[in-house]
Length: 319
Image (cartoon, rainbow, N blue to C red; front, side, top):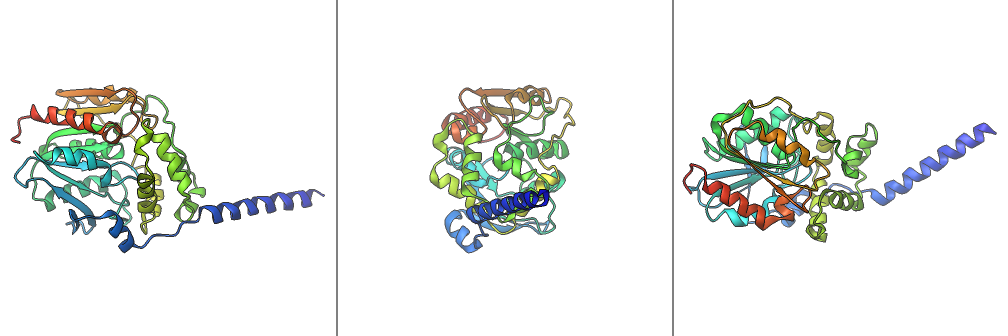
């Protein structure tokens, strides 16, 4: 009798997995199709000195002060569209899909450590002929920006950190469901093949406070680019390699000027982490946005871009 019950339970579990697989199966999308949808006339596919080919956009005057912008985990360079439109009239805006993201795709050696991300930023700067620049990043991109400033302070004219990862945990993060699945051993193997659009939609809803930014087109953008060949495996490996984990080492009151922007309602990286970052710099400005979640550059695009413009105008750089 007990054996029959066990077999019945196993059968039910197997049936459930089959249903989930049928419902959520999402094959890789052809790269040419993704390029047709999400590249544009500004898109370049450049091979860097480290051997990686990245999707990059370089907009604004080549003689203007340069700003490199780094997107967050499972995002893409498109997250900076509004900022780029506002800033490129006075600044050179360089943004690219990071390793394992967007149209760039996986790292050729599957290297997703923080050192590899920092190396890629350096390679992009070299490719663009930059000896110094403003570096900005959101979430994981903010953590990479902070790590780059620690490794190469001589290249940084200023730092823009938008809800950055990397501080010691002040309050436990409320991870969206997609991130939770990506960190579950064994189960996360399935995400390379089973990626329901509904999971992406719910994760985006959990990430922001201003839900109007989550249009059908935005959800499709995230869902489609995650399905670029190799990106889902890269996400799993990146989570396993702790590329997003805190980089506790302080900068010890760096003289680099820094602008710290944070959504007060960020559930992914709590605003309580902002003071830790502020303490690492002697020339810091912190702006907290009420009613805004994890993505101020999208949820409060014009105001945050104006705040960046105002801060940049006070730096000792020609614009």
